[in-house]
Length: 274
Ligand SMILES: NC(=O)c1ccc[n+]([C@@H]2O[C@H](COP(=O)([O-])OP(=O)(O)OC[C@H]3O[C@@H](n4cnc5c(N)ncnc54)[C@H](O)[C@@H]3O)[C@@H](O)[C@H]2O)c1
Image (cartoon, rainbow, N blue to C red; front, side):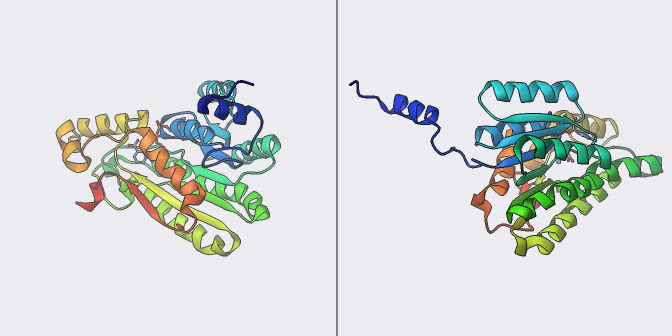
């Protein structure tokens, strides 16, 4: 009988249906905003780390394409189209994840957006939109997923906050207010559910090279806020890559962070330390 080399042996073990491998092996992760930017990076990374992923996004085409691609690569993935600021759509999306995989024990509350304007030009509708997409979405998603986590006695919720929760930028008063709310939402969930096996933490990125981050930089610059390459270099060295935030979220989602609860993990290369 031919002796298998290490590579062949590893492939054989995979095919033999051995215990699933990866830092999220056996887990089911729902990623809101999972079809673009950091959410897309997280959908890919979490799937590569063994999770079954439920991608939730309002971009139907991109979401379906990503789920199809991940399945073609051997992962378990479904897509649910939803506007995360609407209760009925969130509930339907979570239900489709539960129908597909039976439970959800990782929730990455990532979807969010930004409105950049001088404060006096902002409207009540702007306030309502940002609060709904950035904050109410976390309330709706977490309420919909938590019962499944509690039933298993274990779950990790990761919410995307921002440096803007603690470091203000002109033209972003409303955005900063939403991220301040996310900061405290995380602490509240962690405190209330710690004793029932639930962890809830935030990732707080600086400027990231995503559609959101690139638009933010351009719009701030147009309004006279210095977000030139030199200014970003002084604040955080360079633009953050989406995968760098996804890896921080992976840590918080995984058992490696088993005693990390109610924290704000800044992914900003010392932006807020200076
Ligand atoms: N990019 C940055 O510089 C930066 C910095 C700090 C924090 N953040 C936070 O990251 C999150 C988004 O960032 P990104 O950079 O990945 O953005 P992105 O714009 O590249 O991707 C956001 C994804 O969320 C989806 N989405 C947005 N609103 C939605 C809604 N109402 N319902 C469903 N899906 C929705 C979009 O379709 C998109 O796929 C936000 O919470 C934002 O506050 C971004």
